[in-house]
Length: 150
Image 1 (spheres, one colour):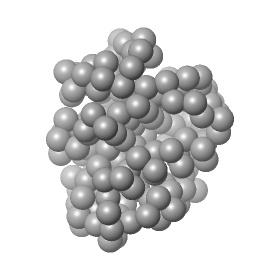
Image 2 (tube, helix red, strand yellow):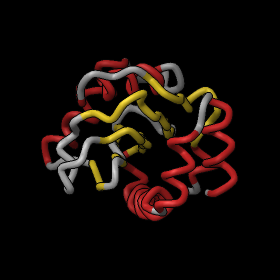
Image 3 (tube, helix red, strand yellow):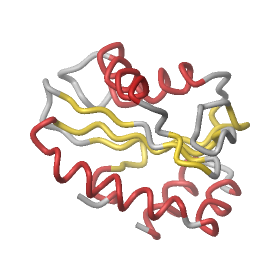
């Protein structure tokens, strides 16, 4: 799976206000719930929170890749958000996070899920791309930048 196949413009939000890890995960889940009709926002949030209990999905350099496996849906969805300011996220480098690319993947696609995570981590770990993402002023600009580089 390529990011451009699972990320849509209406799931891309720039400079979202957020005050905590839980609040940003709630916002991500709310967006995903508009696309995944089989699950509620609370169920999607539960998937993300369950994964975070295993260890933070903050990969460093202000980037997090929250993700969850879905047992009631066959849809794969990505949600991209930047926040108006970085928030504490328990990232591996202990730095606050302001770029979030979330994945929701059916349990039946576990292998594809892992390769997608790897390619997303590689893309977003590019410091030049991360710097450009932080410069984006609106949702469309953010979406176009990611689409052009994925």
